[in-house]
Image 1: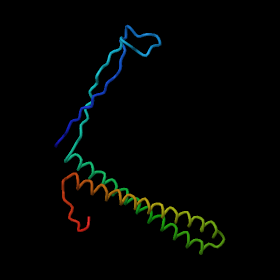
Image 2 (image 1 turned 180 degrees about the vertical axis):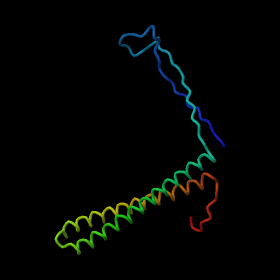
Image 3 (image 1 turned 60 degrees about the vertical axis):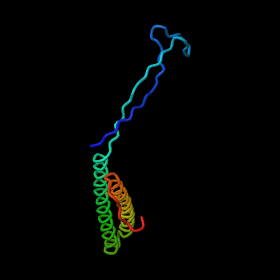
Image 4 (image 1 turned 30 degrees about the vertical axis):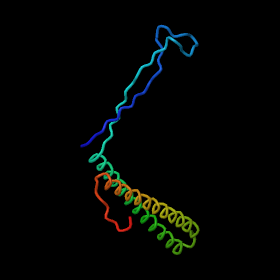
Length: 138
């Protein structure tokens, strides 16, 4: 596992506790302190594993979206059937059919979005692992 450390130096303006003037902005009695922040940048296997985990999460969410689209679409078809079968409450069934159809479209859009997020994470994982793409035009 390869790790790189970057050091960032932050300078803080700090007054001496004993000699702080009551309303001044500082002057000769001010001191500076230095703080060092260490940032660990992971490369290689950790980054590859992170992208693979995100890809797996997007795949799971994509499947949930697909399942939701199928369920909402099936309910819309059921309500369409009920509207024909029950003419007394046909208006109510048509409204429920339209709501279910809208839910199916939204769920399908979510699945489509997650599919593209999964593809992006797959490409990032390939790039992080150092694999070469063998595409003809890309």
